[in-house]
Image 1 (cartoon, rainbow, N blue to C red):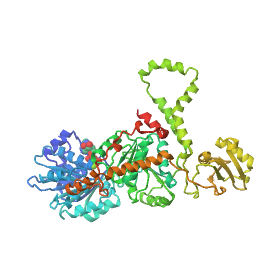
Image 2: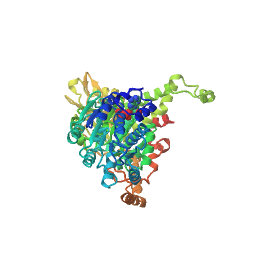
Image 3: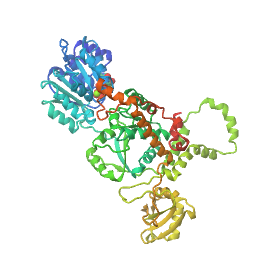
Amino acid sequence: MNNFEQLGLNESLLSAISDLGFENPSEIQVKAIPLLLEKNTDIVALAQTGTGKTAAFGFPLIQKIDLSKKNTQALILSPTRELCLQIANEIKQYAKYVKGLHTVAIYGGASITEQAREIKRGANIIVATPGRMQDMINRGMVNIKDIEYCVLDEADEMLNMGFYDDITAILADTPEEKNIWLFSATMPAEVASIAREFMKTPEEITVGHKNQASTNVSHEFYLVGGRDRYLALKRLADANPDIFSVVFCRTKRDTQAIAEKLIEDGYNAAALHGDLSQAQRDAVMKSFRGKQIQMLVATDVAARGIDVDDITHVINYQLPDEIETYTHRSGRTGRAGKSGTSMVIITKSELRKIGQIERIIKTKFEEKPIPSGIEICEIQLYHLANRIKDVEVNQEIESFIPAITELLQDFDKEEIIKKVVSVEFNRFLDYYQKPSNNLTSVSSSRGNSKEIPSDGAVRFFINLGAKDDLDWMTLKDYLKETLDLGRDDLFKVDVKEGFSFFNVEADHAEKVMSILNEESYKGRRVNVEISNNDGGRNNNRRDHNRRGGRSNDRGGERSFRSGNSDRRGGERRSDDRRGGERRSDDRRGGERRSDRNSDNNRAPRNERSSRRSSDAGSSRRTRRN
Ligand code: ADP
Ligand code: MG
């Protein structure tokens, strides 16, 4: 005897429920099951994830199916392939004592002809993603003209993913008299609009609060020069050593190129986009879930339905074309009660989009400076120290210790500590001290910041002057000390009433920007900028990403092309047209290609990093080993 009996469920379901070990129905089940069993009604049911919604519609649906009819009586729409399979499986388990009930799952990324064949054999219940469903309707492979029930599961997610048009088209293909059962965690405007347009006086069931949108996500933007995006991305990763993130790019091409660059630079990264086969995507997702991948570089389409709970950061390497997509991106973090950060790397020309997004998400962004090289070195240093503190010492090492002790006997403890951490720390320091890795911090309020030139002298403006009781000597002393520079490193110090100018060699320019802009002088915030007043020097932009970065870039592009332009690429495409193997979920990407393999599934670890680029990001390599 269990509490499910009181809900009006029949013997076969009750047996299955007891096999499943469910003892008590959840709140949404208590509210939805009797209602759906008793009445033929539309309903809107709102409850958080994990509250048992599948059974809340699954149990009554199974009981209502008329097994004497062979036609499809119910359609369950769900946002992703994974959820489709999950729901179909659950339904099969619930219906294990219901003889002759057939449930078929249809979703993109698998053979459409095989799915059509299964449906032909008889499907009382179809569980489908909207994209594939629409595709099969268009090809006359399914008939939903006589369905009695249409379940919209995870309706908010489906609409988030841009399936509004598919859903409305599918509903238009169903009979007027059917019932719609809409299940959702939240009730955004689009869900309300579906309810209004397609449902007849739906019953409403709510568990918990409506619109429990994620308040766990903080939103940050980082303003950079257009060519500094990649350097900025690396810094954001370096400043968050335990990052577990999805990096969004706008195009498949950028996605591939950025992932390749990151891998080249020693990060645990991989690409996820529509040019990968389903098997490749599954492999990438498996590594991501297993955390062998820390940075999953993805397109919006490919990242749909990523339901990994522990993502710490979403990084918008570029903003999406459609601003609304931002919500779906940032929703990949801050899940399951955890907190997360959504970071946006933008250039000045895109700044107004931040305001647009703020209006949509009804949340303010925090503008943050890209972490300076010195900050990153500090973060990495403490991270390393913590790793040393926490590492477990393996017995195997004992036999080597005497010889090593002898080798290091001349150093005292403090010296040894310095040397140990320097092994790793120097790599970051070397990397960030290279002028070519410099990156100008841009700030939207300051307005006129400039890029740091790669060589020669750089003239700076500083907002300190005679009114601060400074003359050229005292200002020079202050700068020398704050920046830890030699007396010859600073020159042409020119003090005016309210501000001053001074020069340093380009090598020190990054340091000037990052340190001084964090300083206060007699309680006032110091502001330095590269001065216009630079004596007409040629403000030639440095090669921002070293030769290595550049050639990687090209390399990525080349391999991308060759992957696409070979004979098989063409074959595949015509195949798609004929056999219809193309997955339709990936609607905007008609560019499936399964002949490309190595790069994306490659273990994103040590082997690939070259000497020249092994500096930054190296700690993650060693950590994984
Ligand atoms: P939702 O769709 O609301 O996110 P699911 O239907 O996926 O939630 O259910 C979440 C988990 O809870 C599943 O593993 C499911 O088997 C389990 N579950 C559902 N109902 C019950 C119940 N009454 N008792 C115990 N476990 C349940
Ligand atoms: Mg669910």
